[in-house]
Length: 393
Image 1 (cartoon, rainbow, N blue to C red):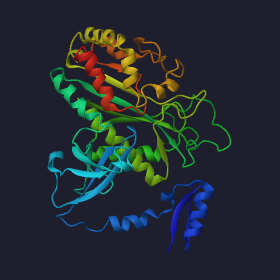
Image 2 (tube, one colour):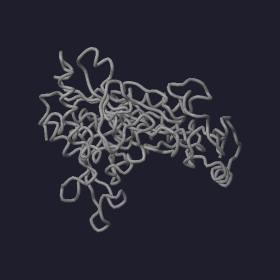
Image 3 (cartoon, one colour):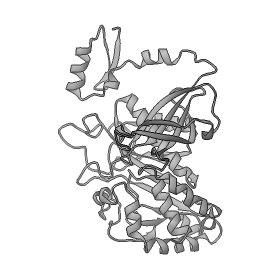
Image 4 (cartoon, rainbow, N blue to C red):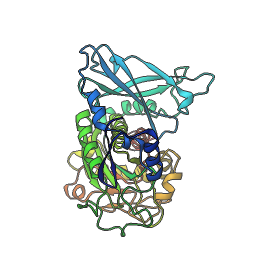
């Protein structure tokens, strides 16, 4: 082998004639990602090769049977797709993704949203897909299927969504990124929207993800360091109807793919560190056309009244484990409401539903549902909000 470059303790190291044994030993001893041990400059040598004009790489992305993780694989096309319906239906081994049995494992991929590929560039694409069983019925983790139908019923109300996706960065040993290996950082306080090497950990990943999402065409609207060190947030939206689910799932995929290049793990666990540390949510901002118009505050108040009568149903829909994950997070502490009680208030981050102060002052705008967990399925969250608020179900 030639020169291998990688990061050890923040320092760039060059090893001449590194062999596989050396790499393996270093990986095991430091809990490094094996991706970190690869020379990215060598990778770029091949990615910079000219691509035939009549060939496009399209990566199909889908939610697996856990309802939380994403999978992906690539195929070559001999045309440039302009819309998801241009793409061929494909299939995969569902028995290896918790979505089928070995004896009948072929599972279908139906492309539903198309994005530019920030990793390969050029005309290459990312395609988000729905998953269907051998009998053409949606898999259990395909929450988009019913979401589309609900959004169609409410399309005249123009439901807009913005989701604040919180997440935590980990080393490959699942220890929070940047935390002391044999202890804890100082207590929460200086980290939220912090600046400085002793305040924030992993900004390179955040900046790379932000730019990659913009390139892909995702409406990412901002980002910030969160209250717990190594915890971050990005916001997606406003997206109308089912598009919020498409955009957020693809933004999650891009985040994990970027972190892979950096050798860092992303977790969407709602309470990754027990104790006196903030959890992670996916606060969901919601509005209808009537809420955004003059005197819209009255419509917001009507929506909150409807939500108050269906608290349990929303808790069940707001995390993949029907509230079990959120149980660790929604304790009434650390800027959360209690999972057992419904509450609402102006500028109150300890409430189930927050009306932003600016909305209260202007008399129109949106509400913020602070209950969804960071590992929620955005299709389920947006669907149940529309069912309760717009359709009155």
